[in-house]
Amino acid sequence: AVVSTQSTGRAMKQISASDSIPIPKDCKVKIDRRIVIVDGPRGQLRKSFKHLQCELTLKQSSIEIRVWFPNRKAVACVRTICSHINNMFKGVRQGYKYKMKSVYAHFPININIINDHTQVEVHNFLGEKFVRRVNLMPGVTCKQTGNKDEIMVEGNDIEAVSRSAALIQQSTTVKNKDIRKFLDGVYVSEKTVIQELEDE
Image 1 (cartoon, rainbow, N blue to C red):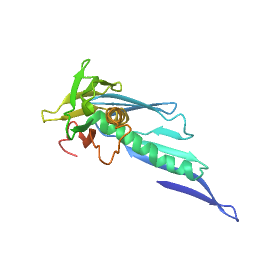
Image 2: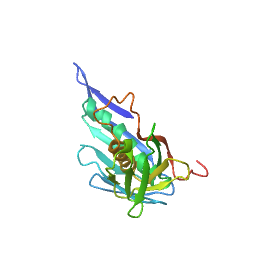
Image 3: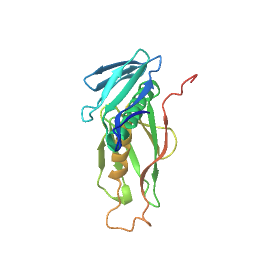
Image 4: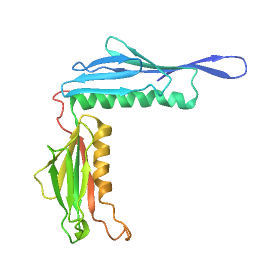
C-alpha cells in the first residue's frame, strides 16, 4: 500500500492511502459507482463497496483503490477491499468448495440433498424425529462426495459458500447438554477450490 503524507509543522497529516490489484487475463472487470462486477470462466460476481468512502479506478490491467485524508480505519479498508476483489477473481476462475463431515457417537446422522441440490435435510440428529431443513444461499449447491458421511458445498462467492456451510453446522447445534461431551454435528473438514489452475 502507498501512503502519502504532508508535514504541517506540528504533525504529519496523511493525504492518501492507495493499493492496486492486477486483473487476471481471463477476467473482465467493470466498475460502476463503487459496484465491482467481475466476469470469469465460471460466471459473474458483483459486490458493492458503496458503504466505504473510497475511489475505485479501473486501469488497463489493474484496479486502483485510494482513500483521501484517511483515518486509521480508512487505511485498513484499502487492504480489505483488495482481499474482497481477489476473492472474487478466485471465485470466477476456480470456485470454492467446502467439505463437511457428519460426526456422531451413537445415532447416525442422515443427510438428504433435495430441491436440485439447493436444500439440505438433516435426519436422526441425536435420535430426534425432527427434520432440520437448511436452504442454501443463491448460487450455492450441495453434493455428496462419495465418501461416507461427507458432503461438499460449492459456489463462486466465498461469502455465500461459507455462510451456507455455517447454516448447516448451526442447524445441528446441541441444546441443553454439555457440548464438550456431546460432539455430534456436521462440521467443515476441508476448504478448497473446485478446479485448480493449470499454470499460475
